[in-house]
Length: 120
Image 1 (spheres, rainbow, N blue to C red):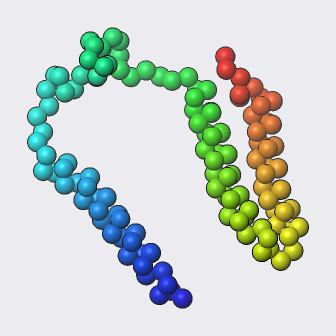
Image 2: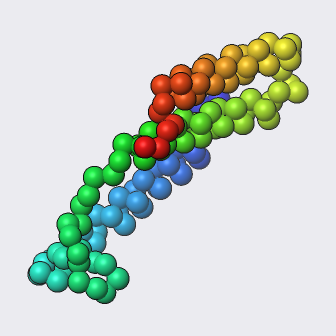
Image 3: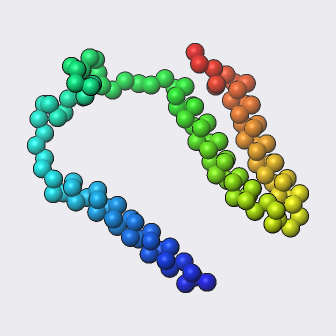
């Protein structure tokens, strides 16, 4: 059984090695000649106006976290939906998925009631 995973392990090692090579070789061998033009923020060829770094409102962060949360929910529910017909007592799998979705929906309702989805 462990021998079945050898191709996956080889693939992962090769992918990580090639990614590391693609990142490290240019960083080590490439020329480094910083000057004022290269260090200036780029605004479509126009002179920069104001600072390049600004703080974003916290609402963007909250929506990003909620998006990731529900995106991960879909990632967890997709394999369950694929094997749903093969589950021995189908109602057990349905109850488990229902509890999972219910917990996430309770979290969403809590955020909604606290005003976390309001854009001030």
